[in-house]
Length: 252
Length: 185
Image (cartoon, rainbow over the protein chains, first blue to last red):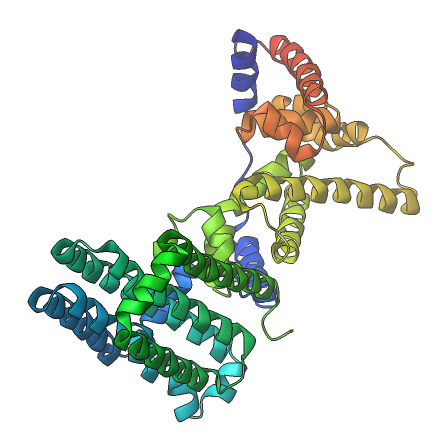
């Protein structure tokens, strides 16, 4: 476009001067001072928060988590089939107990009061840790389930005794954390984990009848119900986070 | 404290996020990225170095004020320019009021005032300042800052045909001036 080029060439003759260095420095100082008064929003993406939280989790917790995975693989390899499934099923709800030390730190070290005044309160920190452990557990259970499935080929067992308890227990933990944000929330979680584990052990003794009952109800239906429950709790959790993210830190 | 040197490559969106999350050092990167460009824009608009410096300062102070509620971080540059544009309009308005109060000159059009101020400026600057403020704004955004005409329409809150019309009229006048001075032909 000849005319456009002509105008551009014409305008190129007129160059703005550079800003005065002293004035620029003074402005930058003023802006720096002003920007300090900006309110801090909580909003951080969940993956960013998880990454930051992971750095504060004690290495012992990660080692324990790894031990769980190795035990599961060893169990599946040596015993295989139903024994391995029922065995791991009993400890699935207790997976969170691996992080129990982390989750209960706030109470044991009398940190909950301090954490309440921080950018993220105790409950929020615990939720992040739970999400982290949940992801690790899911990876461990997936490896374990694939091993058992490869050995026995019984998908029903894997669904009912490993995946369903995991879905339900994770959903229950999320529900409890949202419902009881008090300082004893973490203790409540560990208690709930123990109770669910006990229920699983009781079911293990009556495996045949339970399998028959679940088959009658429909494998897909039961698994879908547990998944729906977990999904519902995650949606609830995300909504709550979305609401909290709009709150300005220390002004709520 | 995290060093800001690694943040230079971050997008405006990421920097705005960081500032909102309390990492105030990210502001330094953002301010340095746009300070000179906004100063130049204000200078082209006002044709005066002191006025441009004042408008630049006002722009950034308004940006800081608006940052907490700013959501559409993808268009941060356009947003800053919009604030700068408003700062220049405010400057013209204030100056007009002061001059009217002091009786220096009665309410005068921006165009006339700009022409008066540009008596000693170079020919191109004169030609630019001879445009109406609306035309000058579009021409500056298009030719000095590389905005597309659609972006300019959005930035100024006007329709696309209105932006195109302003650009066309501005270019016609500049072409006439360029022709008169035998530039670029």
